[in-house]
Length: 427
Image (cartoon, rainbow, N blue to C red; front, side, top):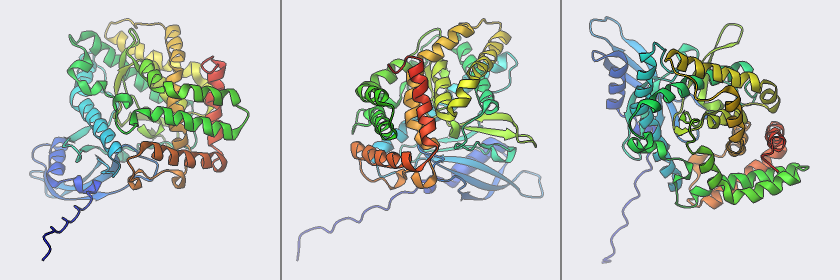
């Protein structure tokens, strides 16, 4: 008889949807509808498509419930953000941090911002309401208000936002930044010391070369640009810059008074939702996905939005108007609080241009995702390797094919490089 022990059967892989527990749904329902709300049934229904989400799995929870004294049951839907339970360990560590940051924002930061706005008679910030935060490691679940019944939806990322859409976004960024300025001026402590999750960022990782992610994206951009042709100086500059990307990112996102606010941190097409009137004109906006919130310059949020979500022509033609809309919103909230803006509009414009390197880093990383078709998106759920270098090489092969197959990529990418050359960022 053999004395070898039989190998233990492998544990079944956990799925994101299995993380949702009935008690979590019940708690979210009570937070939304009150303590008398009684859960009668619930189910999960997916509604997103490939390319909509990257750091997490997003689905919806359809709920039936009754209220005390009511004769009929009612229905409500929530959006659930779930740990994607990926097999790539490095991505899982990043997932843990982004859930920590978003949960921390909703639990700790958002109430402080809302208190500031309420004290001066301002409306709450335009985020989805949060009804449940469940942060057990590797089983994270965040349950949020479903904005779809209110008419909010994602703008078609392939088109590039026009002036009307971007103006709504920057006005709300202005309110967020102004509320945070009031808060930061008042609190007797450093925000990131009291709330350490605010200090965590892309460059916080030192395992499996994940900290080199910007370097890899920069190399990818150089390869794409070389394939396009005619931009030899840009290709050379990108390759020279690649090893310095972490230092550039950290320098560009460093707090820099008086340009110091709480930033959304990930403000691009997929993370804003719009409501429209009967003529199809956007009339309202909601900011979602606070997973990379940070204390930084407002110029970082503005650069992120402008260089990831707009076509080059719209960015050029409407820049002054967009920045003025932002500054007017920011200044108005401070004015209601009887505070003066800490910088002039002209100084804001200079700060916006000073953060172009950040805009460039975000642009070369995000634009290929923005313009991609579903068939061009790498499915992170199927990635099994923990070799980040191999992962990025596979991603490079995909984007190089995209240069030839996707007509939207070249003009979006080249418009970024053209502006960087004109503004002296790329020498």
